[in-house]
Image (spheres, rainbow, N blue to C red):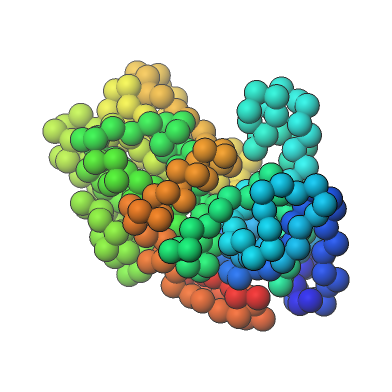
Length: 343
C-alpha cells in the first residue's frame, strides 16, 4: 500500500513509499482509512519540531471502516464505521493509567507520531480506542473528530465555560475555530484575534462560524476591544490557540481578574515569556491542555451529530494521498485551514 512516511529524524525526510499492509494482533482491528486530516503537529513533525519516533507512517486524525477484527475483539465487526483515539501503547499500570488518564501516560506512542499512522490505505488500532461513527456524519468531517475531542477536553472539561462569558480566542486555526464553536454552543460572546495574514481566510471563517467580533492584531488593539466587549473587566476566558509569543503575553493582559486561561497552542520553542507580575495580580486559573479523554470523544461526536459544531466548514482542501505535498504546502503558506487526504 502507498503511505506517507517520516523515515528518519531531521527536517524533512518525508516521502510517499510502498509499505506492507499492517498485520493486526488479537486485540486490534484493521481500519480501511476513508479520510485522514493533516494536523498542525504533522507539519511540526515534518520540520522535526515535535516529538516523533521514525520510521513511521504519519497521520493520526482519521475516519474509516473496520476491514478485519482480531480474535479477542469485542462488540466490533467488519463494516462498522469508526473514528479512533490515538493513544497506543499506554502502559495500563502507571499512576496516570490507573487513575483514568491513559492519554497522558509517559509510555504512550500516538498513531502517526510513535507508531504507524493513517496516511495509508489501512491502519491497525487497538479495539478499545474505537468510537462509533453515526451514519449521518460523513467521513471527511469525521476525520476532524480528534481535534474536536482535544478542544472539548481542554475547553469544556478542564477549563470550563459558562453562558454569558466573554471569550477571547487567539489564533483562528482549526483548534481556535473549533473552540469558537464550542464557546458559542455554551452561550458565550466570542472575539477571535489573528494576524493580518489570517484576515483573508481564517478570520472571515471565524465570522462565518459565529464569532461576534474579529480582531486583526496588525490593525487593532486586542486588549482595548476585549475590555470594550466586557464592560471594562477583561475576558472571562481566553483560549490561546496560536503559540505566538505576542498572543501568550496578550492573553494574560486581556483576562479579567480571576479569569481563566486555556492554553492549547504549541510554540515550537523551548520557552515562552509570561508577564509574571500581571498574572500574580490577576490570579487567573491557567489550564494547560493536552490530548483528549474518552468522554471528550463521545461528547464531540454527539455535538457533531446534533449539528452543534460544523467541522465540514473547516475543510478547505480535499486531496488524494499522492498530493500530500500540496496539502502540507498550503497549510504552511496559510492558504488552508484544514487539509483532508483521501487514501
